[in-house]
Image (cartoon, rainbow, N blue to C red; front, side):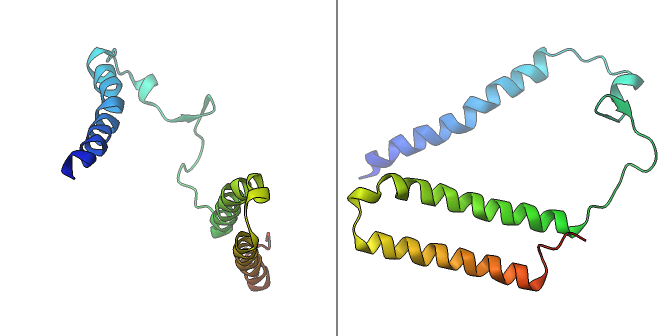
Length: 118
């Protein structure tokens, strides 16, 4: 039984080591000549002017969260739509319940004013 999990362990070790090899190689082999110009903060090729720390409105995060929720909806909806012909009535009801819960969440956010851009 334990031998079956050996493959999972090998994949886990490979998943940890594989990305670390280029990072460690770049650290040791890369050039290290820091100058004040290289260490200076800039954005889009322009020097920073004014206060660099700007607070974002919470509204941006709410829109991002709503986007992620509906993006995940598409991830679940696409395979269901591809296999729709082979699925039965239970799958149709399950997807209807899933879509209803997401629409309910959207209506709730809309009524609470979370989607108002002010």
